[in-house]
Length: 73
Image 1 (cartoon, rainbow, N blue to C red):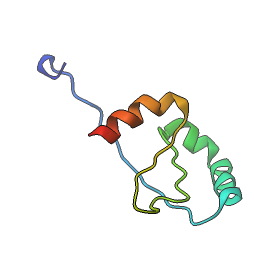
Image 2: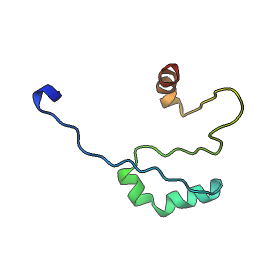
Image 3: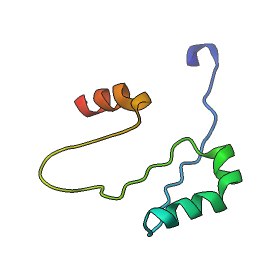
Image 4: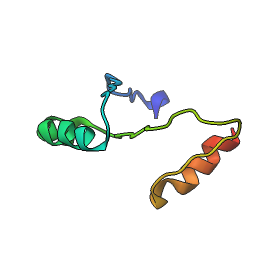
């Protein structure tokens, strides 16, 4: 596609960290729902990003195959 002149749109990636537990996370999402709903591609809840010596990952069933392929790489 790029050989035919197509170029990707410029995008901004914003990483946010909200220091709160579950109820506060949901409140922040609800407070920003209009903005998030029109712009956000993914919302990650990482209560425990690093733990123990092994690797464990979980996701919604729709992301299972993607998660497996990424972990293989």
